[in-house]
Length: 376
Image 1 (spheres, rainbow, N blue to C red):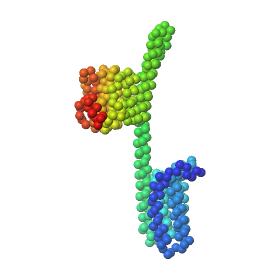
Image 2 (cartoon, helix red, strand yellow; image 1 turned 90 degrees about the horizontal axis):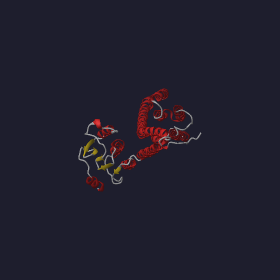
Image 3 (cartoon, rainbow, N blue to C red; image 1 turned 180 degrees about the vertical axis):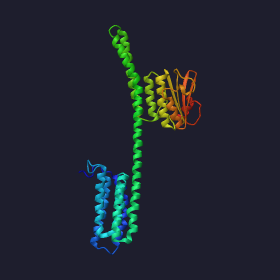
Image 4 (cartoon, rainbow, N blue to C red; image 1 turned 90 degrees about the vertical axis):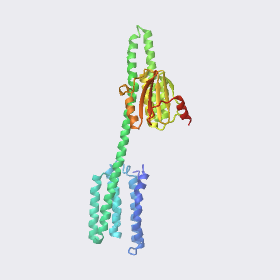
């Protein structure tokens, strides 16, 4: 067995901090005159053996013995610790109950309440009976050490496991949401393009013999579509790898220019904002909407500390009604409002503008304002 394979030092140190509470017992043993030198040496060996094994037990819990399930691993460690504690009984008698909280912690912080509680109660009951038969006058404090402290530790341990499981579940849910988002992005990016490519491929195949010029034109359009789809996928990957506003600007510029739309974007290093996450999501949704639905020739992006504005000269929309929110704008509005902002849509002088404002200020950003804030 590789005893120290993947040893978890952090877990071992955190668990072993409480071993210092065994110190007062050793001090009492060495300052008293009841025990001889041999007995004192034996207790010292038991305490250090208990501490070293306790340290190793928590650090190696996930790896040793290999191929064992968690509960048998814990039970093996608990049994060894119990044996070491019992080895001290001939010398310190009922004083051995000081090891009981550590035995309870070994169970409470590693296995479920259903498995830990019966063992802790049975151990406490056996210890209480032994104390009652040996020195009944010590039963009061012994019961406190055998029951109250172990049950408290089991409760803390179970709560700690629950909290860790909750965080793990939240992490898994976040990963699942990310996978769904990636799947949706890939579907949106490639679904339409591949469908059109398939149709045009069929047209080109049928026209190849009798209408070669038409076939060439179809093949050219297929080539253009495939390049566009590839560029959009690369743009999406860029944004996933760099989930920042600067990364979104780079991805947006690439996607817009690939589509043949002139991109008027600020430089990533000069673009500033106090709401990086919301603005990153907003820039992605708004530029994607321009690419897919507007038919625009130009797209302008302006940003200040608390505003993001995307304008295009495409087909546009009328008014600020939700019925005109297409291409993810409805979801974007919900996200912005959840962050405490507003999404405002305007159509003026042949230009469509979507403004995200986090302060309620609905005044559109002009070039001078954006440039001034970029310099600051």
